[in-house]
Image 1 (cartoon, helix red, strand yellow):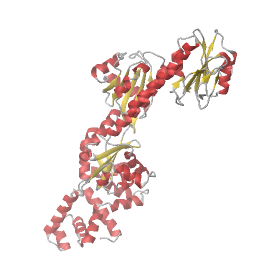
Image 2 (image 1 turned 180 degrees about the vertical axis):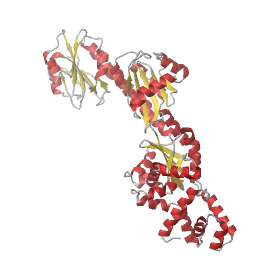
Image 3 (image 1 turned 135 degrees about the horizontal axis):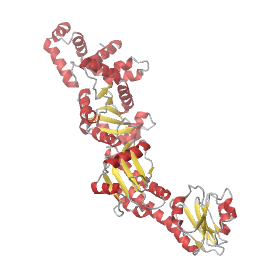
Image 4 (image 1 turned 90 degrees about the vertical axis):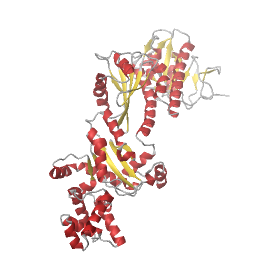
Length: 556
């Protein structure tokens, strides 16, 4: 039976890869090809070439032909007599052409051919070169399949390095955000003192860390990308660096020390290797940041207003504690470019201790967002005072990074409004700092809560009435007013009189016609219920704002 994917000579003999082969045979680059044939008598190479080959076809007969059905990016091995027709009939192809002497054929100079051929003088039998190139494709295919198997099975980075040592042929090491050694090439000796120090001490020296941060991370600018560091007074060999960033957070750093081999070829091989490393790092990140893809994307999607079906949202959030939660608060930490990359990762780790660990941290547009949640119906569970002290202890005090905080909200689909609140709270920190400085003689604030920024936001020309409405609807006073209407009590009126009479319980009691102890009881009960203190002038100013809003609504 005729095989559509084989090469045939005039007598019908089949060459190359047999029937049943897949439609793609690896991903061999031009630089990998040049590295394999560099020790032979090469007469011509392209001035520039970035070709990648997905199939290999030898043409041993000078009168052979190639059935190119479904074949693209083919690398041919052939003689001079058939090279022109192969190139013309297969526009995406490339040829390794064997010639009998040291003369380059005249047709090579043509514009549409000179960058699609390598000319070699044939000093051995054709099948020697055929075997060489077949081995190139087969070895690459086996290597890539083995790496993919590790990724599919959620394997370890050291296993990925182990099966890549023969192909890369040079020392590889992977460190974490603190430059501690995670994995390295155990069968290949470290070529230089810096790498030997790393292996012996399980971390880079301070000098190496400084070089990486100045010469690699400063160039990468929070993006996973290949960076080449050429030899210098401390390093005899060039090195390929690849910092791994997931959601703008620095996670791993991978280095290939290029002691031997073509630098161009090593770059191509290293990028193949790094694709698998990044896949494993993504899985690691999902676990480390306490988020499992794809459900954490639902939170980002809700914030960004992405189209998502209700069934999809419910199915993804069902994997979390969110459906059973009664209330939420969202924090936003802005990462300054002045912060070191490893410190950012430590901030993320510290953020997981907020709210006794009942948090979901996730990256969004370069910021760290932390969703606090609680299954308790107790209104003090996510109080502003607790959040303030929590952020101060775990993030602000050790790292100097303040948070913008939303008000407490009760439905996860309101996270978009909460996100805007957290952004605004941090953006309008200046007037709140001025207020704290005037009141307390200090403007050192670890957490800027939107409930205290709202009054300044309303005074700006660009305030959003929908967000203002949402904010008032989620206020403490609004809840108390609804309870008064339902039960026929007048707690809201009592607190209004109390605040407007200098918090004098005796005067308040006379004006609302109750006993003084009744006033003190209700004040104390509210302070305990919501974890607030009427001694706070910042709290009182927000409550007065809420009262005026209620008066506009004629609810007081």
